[in-house]
Image (cartoon, rainbow, N blue to C red; front, side, top):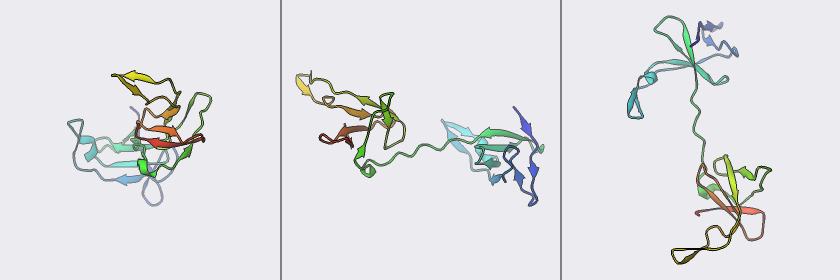
Amino acid sequence: MSVTKLERNAQNKFVCPTCGQELKYVEGQAVQLVGGRADMDSILPKHECRNCGVFYRELLGSGFYDVFPLPKPPKKILRTGDIPPTQLKREADGKCECPRCGERMDYVEGRPVTIVNGKPDMENVKDHFSCPYCKSVYRRIATTDYFQWSDH
């Protein structure tokens, strides 16, 4: 644990010891439940530096501050209706970027029809892309290089 004494600028605001930008003061919030337990850290005020991705919290009114990483915001996942037909191409690793969540999705090669419970399973007959992160599937539109989101 490294503690730091924060310096103030001419406007009497704290500045980040790493980049020198003015820190944003954030009031403490109400107690929150995280994982079924009370998160008492949320009630303490903090000074954030968005540029460095950290925040500083004072230690017991001592004038010294401990540094913590800012939590990363969750990735934004597009609604399926907002995804237009997209041209997708495999890269050298056989993957490409998912238009819905931005993660790397797998290319699934088509395989012969299989019989499941006495019925033909046509699910994986044609080549398609599958994203393990947002569970999206993109199927080829006719004989083009364009793919459309599919509900499996």
